Image (cartoon, rainbow, N blue to C red; front, side, top):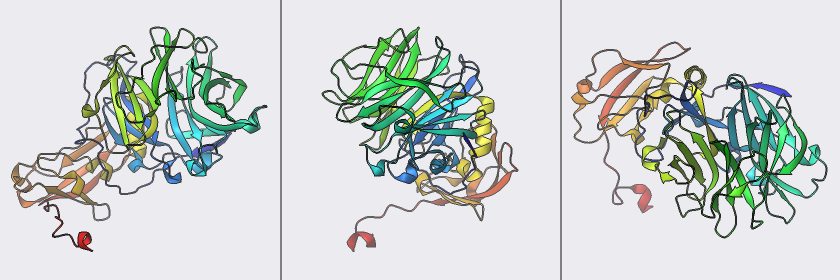
Length: 432
């Protein structure tokens, strides 16, 4: 077993919003029915370039509005933890003891080919910051795997009958379709024990990948991507974690006609239902849906904001101390300032100078600067306080940004009228 310490990369990044405005973070409900959980941690990767095949984190206070940590840069070094140099499809889990965390991920660099990977990565942490890790190559670890072409999208779940952690994933051997298998991890979560066994048997013997299990009312709901007819997400249900899965319906549950993969489900802390999200991998989009019964799903994209573009990932509820720990480790003053909102603010033209400690906030033409009141994401352990009465009639105002565990930082905020967009007649780059 190896060990690393994650460090924070301070990189200035102007985030692009996926949908609408980045909302001020706040709870959608005052209820908290889920063991003191106050927010969510989203683990994801971002693309098919090797630099994008790495674990990244984002947080949310309500499950709908997400803010990238560490400037959307990796929180774990893929080249250190993996055999291939890249990891994809991270799944994060809180252990039954409530204080230990497991992650599993595909050990893969897609640039080497879709049949190039042979294993997965197991990770373990007690604080979400420092992670121990083990890379498992199935052809080296298990007998009879000579024809193995790929190991994809692992996830883990606690088996309260076996009292062990089950890891499940898809395997493809030779010309046979991908099938979802499972195996148990050892007590230390550093290795796998026994032999892989098939978890789900497709009635059409079609390829099945990207398994995701959610437990509800003593039943296990297995979401998976099937390649029969038109590829899409279906659900199989069983009263047993490791056997007996039958299709809940022959219908797909994604709420789009575009290609999807990477289903991820999580229960909302306020008890209002479940979120099913999935990667619209050919569209550069990520769709969120909501359900109360894990049968019917409604698109809630208009309620969701992210200042990053995720690929296949998972969400886990977290407590307030855990959120503060993540913020202290991975949040910086300029990242907080990038969440600026306010009537007339044009965020996609925001300019932050981390050396001079200045922020220029363009306002739409005709905005009343005297009435402009900047607002920032409300995050635990973070405060953004003006140095004097908020009045931008002179266009300049000092602000103090304090992040838990760090000394306060002062930035000078200024406003200016946003430039009108260039037209074809005025853009030199368009006529060359």
